[in-house]
Image 1 (cartoon, rainbow, N blue to C red):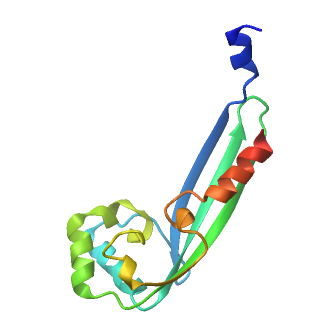
Image 2 (image 1 turned 30 degrees about the horizontal axis):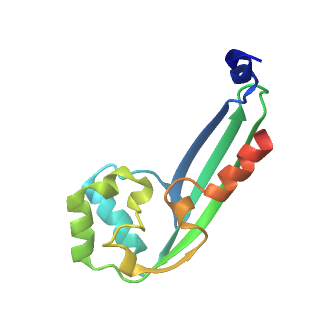
Length: 137
């Protein structure tokens, strides 16, 4: 076989993923403003939120397509107003779903418990993605 034939026989896999935050039954995307980010983070303080991440895998050669979702519950200690102010000043919370970034050094001390995987909270559940890719091959 030549190189082109080898390439033609290799599968092409497309992976699409997205994550939202669910808080008190409402779906939260990226905050639209600093005020909304404040409201989001203040709401999590002393309470909990969940992330729901979806992954869709498509084999572009065969047309096989499968998607699933993963939910993670995050429980918080009280988050001081000064910490929320610093997070908003930095601006990163404006670029993530629900203003939620549990891996940030300012946030880590206020995480009480994560029920699920942190990679899912961060946007791509690795085990689920691997499973779907294996099914698509």
